[in-house]
Image (cartoon, rainbow, N blue to C red; front, side, top):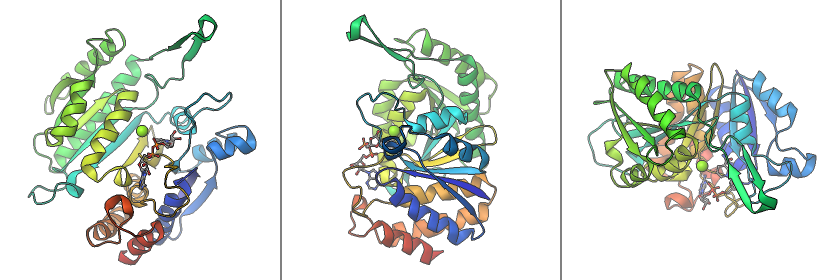
Length: 340
Ligand code: NAI
Ligand code: MG
């Protein structure tokens, strides 16, 4: 198994270091190809995603990605490498599960009943990179790109996921189509029309549609009412941070970026400059990425071992400060490996 490792900036290398140790512990023969991307890379080489990194990501069986620190001001020549990687590798489905087990104890439902999944379109929308200044710099325009092709395949991915969750025991499978077609009549109008067309092909899965603002409130208030949520790029980015509160916060939120035969796994969180360098970042989101990677590579046995070990550590400690503990990234990683 060839795994391309891009740890990036800030806490990226800290949490991926832990994740890679766990991966090596379960698959000793894994072939790790470590390459670079991010803000530090840009400052050194003048490019945030070097060609060699992209080539290594293409050649590998899967990619593990940490986080990059993209500045919030415009820097000529800089573009977020993770957004570019998703587009270049055509990783169109960003799957962001939220496992309620960690914040809603004492119910009798199984883990699958206990979770929702945000399925976010990953290649277009407002992140299509079509921004420009006009009017001598006094007007800024961003184009929101929505295509029938991308909408159709992401909604299909969501319904297929709902079906597989139903097969795994989820009662009352449902897909919630989230949009803002009442205002974005043309772009989300197309997304909505295509989504409802796709939904008609899945009579076994309940379908509902919801405007994005009320979806944010309901995800905060009644997460149990959701199963699979499918939406466009920016909405999915924001809603997944809202929803992850119910899964123990950003330190436990993981995601898969899937395309045809390709996959990149990354924690939902960013480079966390406020805690970077202190050795206290929670590595469990990155470690769950290893479990997702193993599952995707059809090593379900290894994935289950990683998840069981991480769950024991979550229950018994040690815990990093974001979960109320006082332990370090390395303490948690060592404990997970010991449980393996
Ligand atoms: P962030 O996700 O980096 O951090 C938000 C908050 O959550 C911070 O208080 C941080 O300390 C905490 N946090 C995040 N991950 C944690 C972990 N594993 N353990 C414990 N606490 C954790 O978001 P923020 O601060 O808005 O962005 C920082 C930088 O990261 C920015 O430059 C942004 O562009 C970048 N970013 C990169 C992403 C990526 O590479 N995929 C995603 C989101 C942001
Ligand atoms: Mg985000």
